[in-house]
Image (cartoon, rainbow, N blue to C red; front, side, top):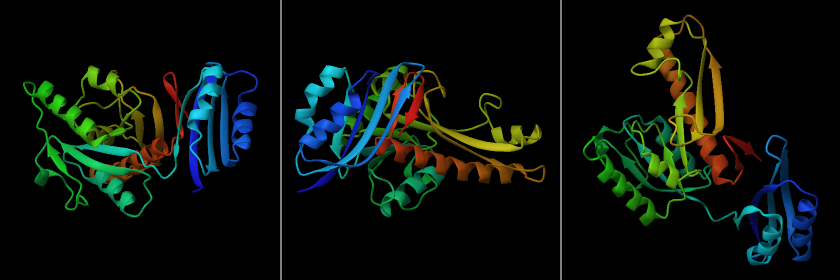
Length: 278
């Protein structure tokens, strides 16, 4: 049966890459539906994402080509949705948007589990679409134990991606390293200027005129991972702290959902400390 497939690859830029890829797909009777590529002058690397239709699995035959060019690559059916584990604290705006987008088919992924550091009834969401909720309370004395439990849930669900939907705990360096490129976080744009409690109130007191949010991959360096998506909105002096919080929530949920969608469509390529979006 003919189906669409996604091929994503990166390697050192060199002559013949596109010819080799397109030639192989043509030889196997595949039809390219779309293709995007980028040569990164800073690193000298080449990135390519191609969507093609084929009635056969072409991954085994592509392996020798990938080896010849030293590629990091993946190939999968477009219909095979990535599996997601979402982590939450109390705020519900980000997880609500992800669940809604999944329910209407806009999120190309399956949310298989939700992990929270507070009891279920504290989360600002009534309906979780029957997604299992796991309560893992975190304290200094239980952090290592609960992170082991988290890893167990990741393994049992087969999660391809962990999404921190306003999860207000810091993951360990080991967990971040073990899941590099597979954890996405969202935070407001006031860092590092306004840290700690009530950042929107701090920003209001300083007369901030722009509110934004950043979604990025999580690394051991807190809130400093490769950026995937960002957005901002302008406000005026008339905005109260509560107004700013409302605007911030809306931006956060939009930016996080877009970042997760890009990742799940295999459009995000890591290039050192930044990302290439194809």
